[in-house]
Length: 119
Image 1 (cartoon, rainbow, N blue to C red):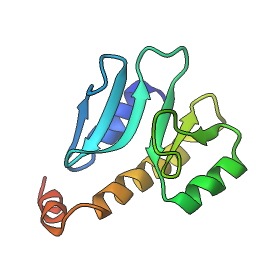
Image 2: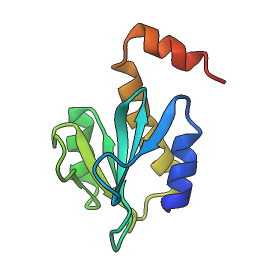
Image 3: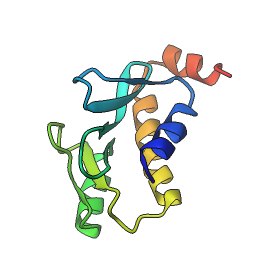
Image 4: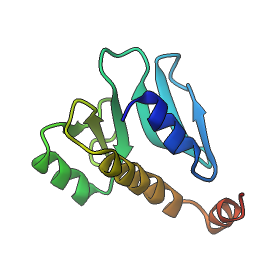
């Protein structure tokens, strides 16, 4: 996965916006105003930070050397995944979907309904 395919995949999801709230170097993907994915734009390599439930976050870190606690994020809930990994695009998409779904589940019922009703 690269930056373009990451952006395309994320932006195809209902209610997703991209922002630069931390300055021009960090792209943040949000759903209903809540972050579910971040990536650096000026880094020498492409990596993505994704939200994850605490148990799965630990499991992924133990299983894959390219998954580490996310820098400047709550390390209980966020992992950074390097694209220098052997991860397939399908696995990348699954992990992005998991992050998106986790954040959507934390939204109010009204916000979830609004997302379901988007084209």
